[in-house]
Each structure stands twice: as C-alpha cells, then as structure tokens.
Image (tube, rainbow over all chains, first blue to last red; front, side, top):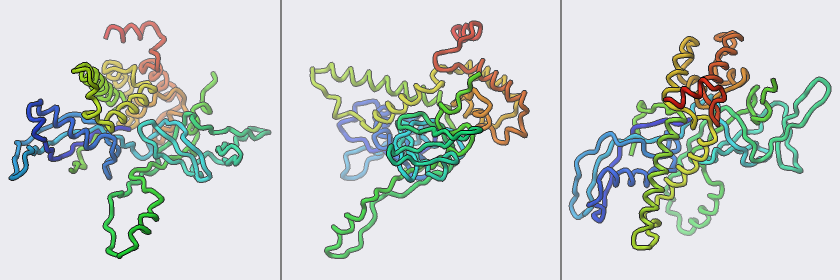
Length: 207
Length: 151
C-alpha cells in the first residue's frame, strides 16, 4: 500500500530561520511542499521518511535566501495493481460505489465491477448483491460506512496543472464556467467481483 | 522536483505506522510546547495543515489494522516459518498487512493458489498466520504472547 521513493529538490530557507537547526527546517519545508499532495506518476505523499544528503548552501544575487539541494526519501501511498485493500463505503450512485481510506478518498468501484448480479435500489440509493442460494435470492445491501474489501484494478493519473488560456478577448469568463467537472489528480479503480471481495461481513467464516 | 523511478521500494503498514506515529507525537509535543510560551497561541503560523491532516488520517486508518500489534521479532519469526511456501514478496507483504484468516482471503492474495498450494498447505499457512501474526488486541494463546512480552 505504501512505498518509499527517493526525490531531489532545492529548498529555499528564509533569513528569519537561519538560527534554527538546518535539518529540521529542511524537513519542515519539504513536508510543507509535499505532504497530502499528489505527485504525478508517484502517488499521494504522506510524510518525510529521511534525508539522504544535503548539498552546500548557495546564495544568489539580490536574494537573501539560502538554497540547498536536498536528496530525500518520502513515504508515498501507492497501491500496486491487483493489491487487496480494505476501506469504507463513502457513497453510492448509479455509476458505482466510492470508497474511502480516510486519508485517500478517490477510489471508485464502477457498477460493472460489482459482484454479479447486483442491483441499484433507487429508493435507498444503495447497491445490493443479489445473492442466490438454492431456492431464494437474498439482497445483501452495501450501506454507507460499511467496511469493504476490494482489489485495485487500475490507477489514473490526470494532470491538473493550470493550462494556458488562448488570448481571446471576452471569452475568458465563459471558459472558467465550463471547468465544472473538476479533474481528480489520482483515482483508483477497484473491483469486488471475486469471491472474498465486497463487504467484510459477507465472508466471515462460521466454524 | 523529481523522483528516481527505480528507487521506489515497498513499505509494510507496520513501518509506515511507526513513521507516522512518531511524526504525530513530535508534532503534538512541539505544539504543546509552543502554546506554553508567552501565553499566546503561536501554533497557527507554523502549523502545517496538510501534514497534520494526512498523518492524523493515516494513523487513524492504520490503527484499525493488525499492524499495530506487530514488531520486528514477530515478523522475522513469521518469515522463517513461511519460507518453505515459496511466496512472492508482494504476497508476503499483503499477508502481513491484511492478516487473512480464511482460505478465500488467501486465494485473493496468492496468485494461482490452486496450482501452487494444496488444500493442506493452505490450511497450514492459515494456521501459521493465526499463531504468529497477532490480531488486533493481541494473541490469545498463552505461550506465544509470553514470547512477545519478553521481546
């Protein structure tokens, strides 16, 4: 679920921090930049693991800050494909179920990847697995807040950096209005279509 | 800022738990200390909301998993016991993180489990997991829990 990755960066230290311990200030700056952010193609950055090396402090003309090149390792949330994870159901809609892990919310289990057969109960806005025993079909409802075990099937990284607007006179306001569907930088697509997956309560062994 | 693509190494939930817990505790100590100085609440200017949020949430998530009961001795013993099953590193990591208790869960984690493990071996593996990896709340068996207390 978690990985540690080596990164490089240049940290700028403002003069009012010069009397503090260098490693602490560098650590704080790195965490300020990276913690709780999505690094494209890497994952959700959690916290600093350690600092591997710090270069010399460099001064630039007309700039009072020190600049230091730092090589460090960061704890990142990046589940492997086909990994099994456990989360809680956040919401359901006709398209599928969204699952949350607390620190990461953008996990989607599309309706095609639910246990087969499942149906969407419009009145309660929840999905239910139509579990067939010998003579009857039971509706096993997937309520919000339930713990769910799923397999990671796909990860989608989207570039959400601001894009350059073409220089068109008055159409800028119109364009920003169209950005209603916010792009999510990191989405995980999951599946519960195998035996053992789905709500944890479905698979408790009664011995 | 860039990352070295071949430097990515997996971390078990237990290792992440240790890092996040230590960070959370130092943060709490630092903020309590700062509040004491001059009677003012100076914490907000230095507060790193992103870090605090994500470490708190990650800690809350990991505290619901069996990784809080693990320690290096337990993991080393477990690894020695399961070496004979010839499991891949990712499978071992998932077993340590998820603590499967039923054959169904094991099948999800182990690729091609029908060809690689017989039913007897599956049952043996589950028994090893049950005896060596403590669930949340600690192990019930008296002899193994004594071992943990000593280490």
